[in-house]
Length: 109
Length: 116
View 1: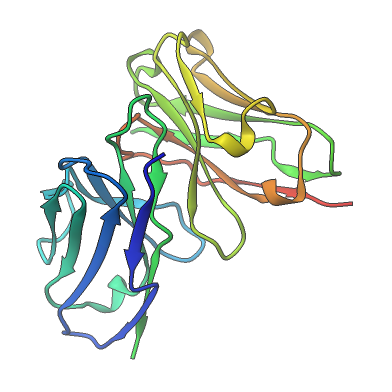
View 2: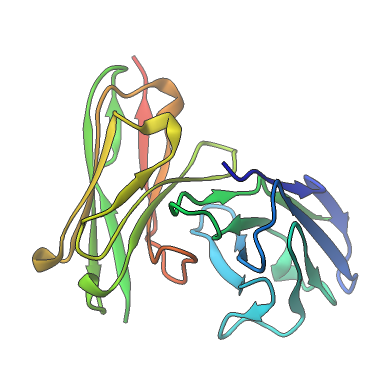
């Protein structure tokens, strides 16, 4: 099974800050990595797919990079609505048994 | 408009069974893999199971293999998750989601509580 490890588990930041969240896979997953945002009490929302492709309608302050085992999600200038939990997910494995990272909670400093 | 609406959650005793349903609308269900994802209270997301467009392939996370069964009825635009031998650790909000690799569309979730 492919294990996904996110860091940090939690992060405090201020509006306007640039933040980076990291996701590491236990083996190479090429660029088969997706990022989701989840606000409290809501379903997850897809932000980035295939490591760096921005989902339609997602603000351009969100960006993703990486390949192989190491990936990052960057928010260039935090907005109040960005304080939420973020999850990475691999979509590489065959058979298609998908796994999520444990999540990163982004809180207001 | 794509909509996914889960139902069937509730309180069940350990060892009991529950059947979740996901009603799909706004797209052709038979064109997509479908997935169940769950989230225990205060915890992260866990992929549970997925099923191919025609139901010929399905896959499960190890912790539910042999207890849960995913199925679909494309004619009725419905996805199901039959959950047997439920355990306290199955307590979670269960989401259905469209797709196999990444999920643009999600339902609102249905809460399953396993407790005596």
